[in-house]
Length: 416
Image (cartoon, rainbow, N blue to C red; front, side, top):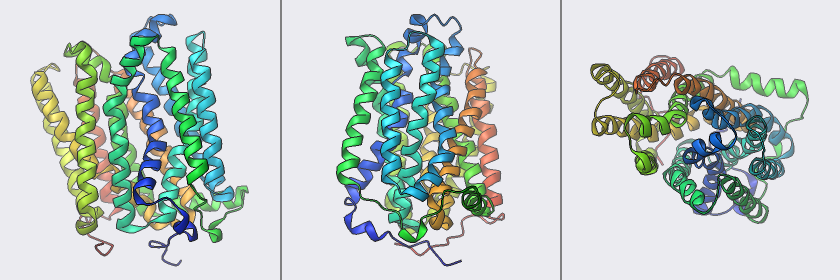
C-alpha cells in the first residue's frame, strides 16, 4: 500500500484558507456541542414542563441526541466516500435544522426524545465529514496542528453554551433554545454552500455496495494503530460525556453553585481550549505521540490521585480542591483528543470517510454509553463521576500501549 500520509486533495487550492477552514470545521463540529451544552441550564425547566418526575431521567435529553449522533456516523462515512463530502454534509445539516424545529414544538417528553435522536442523526454528518475534509487536505503533524486549532475553537462552545442557554431562557421558555439551534444550522448551511468545494480525492471514490463498504471497514478495523487509538479515544470521551450528563447535578446539588454553574462549567472549557492551542503550537516540533502519550499517563495519574482524595472526603471534598484537580485533569485532554484523532486517521487517508465513521461512532455512541453509566450512577456525591474517570483513564492508557506495542513516545513523522 502506498504512503498516503502527506497526500492533499486536488481541490486544496479552492478550499478556504487555513483560518477560515479552521473556523468552518470548528463551527460545524460545534453544532454538536451546542446541541448538548446549551440544554444544561434548561433541563430542569424542560423536565417540569413535560412532566418528568425523575431528575436523572432528564439526562436522556442529552443521551438520546448523542446516541443518534453516534449511530448515524457509521452511515455517513461510506456515503461521503461514494458521493463526496459536500452534499452529504448539507443533507445532515438540513436534518439537524428540521430536528431543532420539531424539538421546539414537541408536546411530550417521549416525542422530544425521539426528535432529539433524529436531530443527532443529522449532526453526525458534521463530525464525520469535517474530519474527512481535514484529512483530505492535510496529513501527519500538519493534520494534528489543524485539528488542535479546530478543537481550540470547538472548546469555546462549552464555555459559552450554558450561559447562552440561561440568557435565552430569560427572554422565553426552553422552546427558544431549539429555535436558536435551528438558526445556527441555517447559518452553517449557507456558509458551506458558498465556501466549501468538494475535497475528496477523485481516485478515492468508493462504490456504495456491501462488499466495498465491508472492505473499507475491514481496512480500518484491521489496522492496529487506528483500532486501538479509536478505543482509547472512546474511553477518554466517556469521561467527557460522564461529566456533561452529571455536571448540573454535581455543581448545583453537591456544591451549591446555583447560577454560578455556567461560570464553573466555562472554566473547564477555557482550560481545554488553552491546552488545545498550546498543542497546536508545539505538536509540529515535538510530535503527536510524545505529547499525547505524556498527557495520557498524566491523565490516568491525576484521576487516580483525585479518586483517593474523593474517598478520603467521602465524595464531598471542598469545591476549590475538587475544581483544581478537575482542571488539571482536563488540561491534559487538549493534548490527547486532537492527537489521538489524528493518529487513528493517519494511516487511512485512502478510506478517510469509513475511518472517520468508525472513529466517530466509537468515540460518541460508545462514549455516550460509557458516560451514561457515570451519569445514572449519580448518588448525591462526586464519587461515581471520579471513579468512572479513573477507570476509563486506565483503560484508555492500556489501549494506547496496545496501539504502540508497548513502546510509547516514538515519533513516526518528521517535524514541520
